[in-house]
Image (tube, rainbow, N blue to C red; front, top):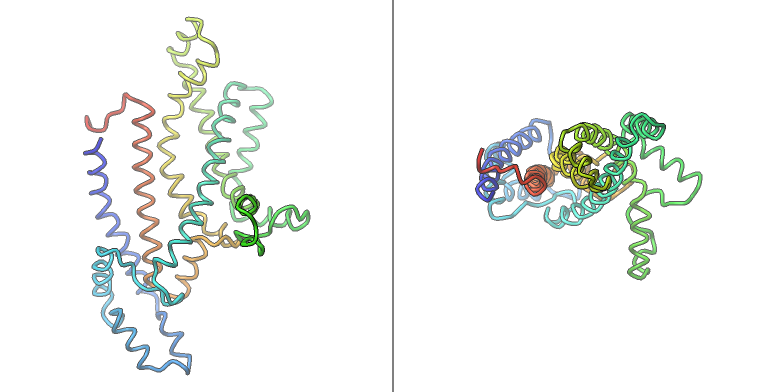
Length: 323
């Protein structure tokens, strides 16, 4: 398993290089740069802008700038954010943590609800509850997350039961630790629901299909013939085999939530990577864009690797070193 993990990491390196090079090229393919807006400011001299361009090698060709950026990445130097006027790490760190909190809440809600509902629908096949769950799942799949976020915000604006956006209330710093936790939970409700409902519907349908397929296997019939309790048959023998395909999806879910919740974050005014990436692209803050892209690529690789490790832990029959 260790050899397999090392092999996956070595394969990920050229993948990240190609991804970063393509992003860097596309950023420089668009006209203009961040300093074009500074040139319109009469308080900033041309000598100051020229000194900044020479300091960060921005007066060189794009490929030379890319090599310069790679050299700094090797030394864990992610560059300088021109828009925020601070190092990229100081901008990216808090935003990455905020997105991780939202992604973790969405992931927990999706998996803790979808798997039991999928089992319930499979056990109740053909009954009214199965039809109701299928209808709700299809409705969740058909509604885009950003539109659902707008709809939830509109409902909350009429009822006034939850915050309309942001991550903290104005009096957050004055609250005790448990008050801060409750305040964070209230702000998490709308973006978490908006992101989770679509994934929940898809995961519930997949779990239902997998469970129905497993329940028709011969070993399930043998377990029942031996007189095992129905709960043990369902939640030990059947569940362990039905959940294997879902574990493969876990890696994509993890990386997708961390990098694919941009529109929902912007609509809900959640201070995460989504709004940060939009600001960086609009302002042509190239080093901030590159660092955000690199974090997304690393999370994608790590998510798939974690899924492979969990798959081995769930099913002892799988051994990657024999492949």
